[in-house]
Length: 186
Ligand code: 5GP
Image (cartoon, rainbow, N blue to C red):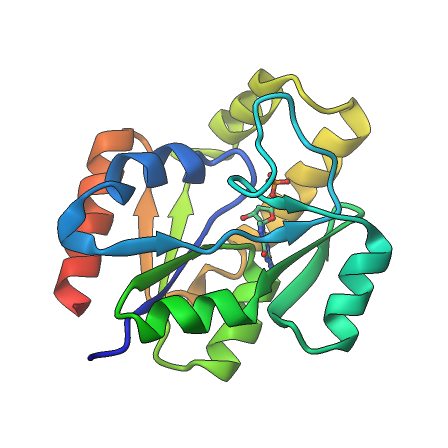
């Protein structure tokens, strides 16, 4: 069986990666599986453990790092985030195209290990719109919002690391473009 693709989807916090993903993920033609990350961040009200993330402690996360259990990991606005290696490999070996929704530093680590990974970066129509979306979420204090905005600006400077850049002005259009990109690589 042909090994599945490794697809990296990145974009600044608040750009709508999750919403865009929801609109192409269920397409059976894409044969996708989502890689659930581990994080030490606090769970937001609507998030479910084991579905959106594996929520864990710093101690457990650091143990996963030291045991080489992660394909990549990073510290983002004071919390750890990482991709469990064994699940990604198991799913790809089953022929699934595995989708990683990760930030730029993690994407660079994955590209070094898997140079054939398909890399897609989602950009907002403008930085003003991004700020509006982050604030609209109303889940974080001002200090964290500021840190997320400055990280967003740094991430936008690294889009040249990605093969494809897609603007999320309209969710369905962005999802259609990403669907076409994935199909083209299958
Ligand atoms: P959030 O806290 O908004 O869920 O995620 C913050 C950022 O971390 C987002 O850009 C998200 O894509 C990224 N992220 C989520 N999981 C991972 C991961 O496993 N590794 C890396 N490097 N970034 C991740």
